[in-house]
Length: 425
Image 1 (tube, one colour):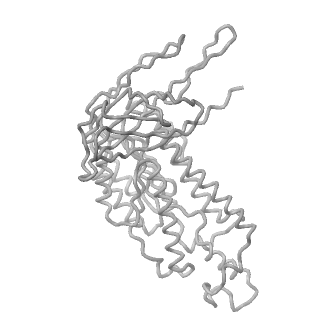
Image 2 (cartoon, one colour):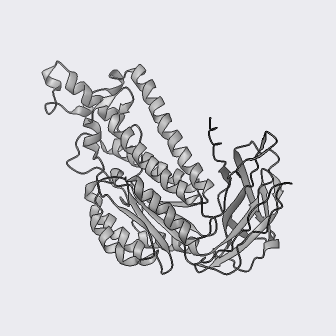
Image 3 (tube, one colour):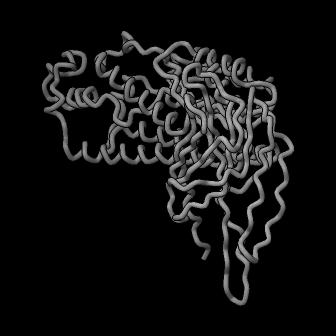
């Protein structure tokens, strides 16, 4: 992925909307040999309020109907906005915060354009098999027809061989060209079983997962500058299994290393090899550390999404999973379904930890896209300057309440502060 694309992405976003500093530090002011620094953290949260019985969005709430707490401490809601049908219907400019004594801050410009939403379509083609190429293209067509509306700013990026890097744009005429480029490049079960393994497990699995997470993370870092528009991240992937088909891989290794001709590949049923006799506890322990590294990357990805107030919706193009293809003789049906469940669980984690939901194990993509469109169009934006009593606490828990019975709220319930910048020597 070209680094120039990320520069253009940041410039496009900055030009299309007002930028509010979130968690940034004012430049130090020297005075008589002493350096003073200050920071003002503005936090923006989207919340959807529905009637618990009818599931209908409630658009008649006011600022005073909401109570927002951070780590149990009430916060003053400085900015309040309602978006109904994808259009902001009230001012989102936060009230001015009183700066510390001796600090002069520039005036905040009101946003010039708050129409539409920001939608990033992330195609993880490194984890989608080639046989699903046609379904991915159909899904992208549905997304363009049902989710991307006039006034929405959208972009598309892929992780692998599709080589898609569409800058953020309002031009929907680019979509047919994007669709024609989509191509799956994921590994088949047999590829994973026969892939070269190390003490850390299949090396290709680690490389591909790291590429997907780092690409998504870079996009989310650019989104953290925007606080006044709905940000939707459509994450199209078949999910992740950091230790795929372990028993089948052990059987295959045993066949390759066996000195007994009766167990050579193709002369005996590989399922007859007892995997418990082939395990190496030392290599398995290292593989657990390998999985932990990828899990940490996955956790940091969701933390960055919550810092940027981005909602991730994951979509598995496999749809309703059945069993392995007839030519996939290296894995049993039970092993295949275990892999499907594990990979779908990772998609659920990514979505649910960021306020979205996972579209997995279903073929009705139209229904899911309509739900995503509704959630991305009807919501409230609550903004506040954090007065957390522990400014050094990185993980902050959010609780939002409304003074109306019989409602259900959807929002991200936590965010994590950015790591402090490294000191310049």
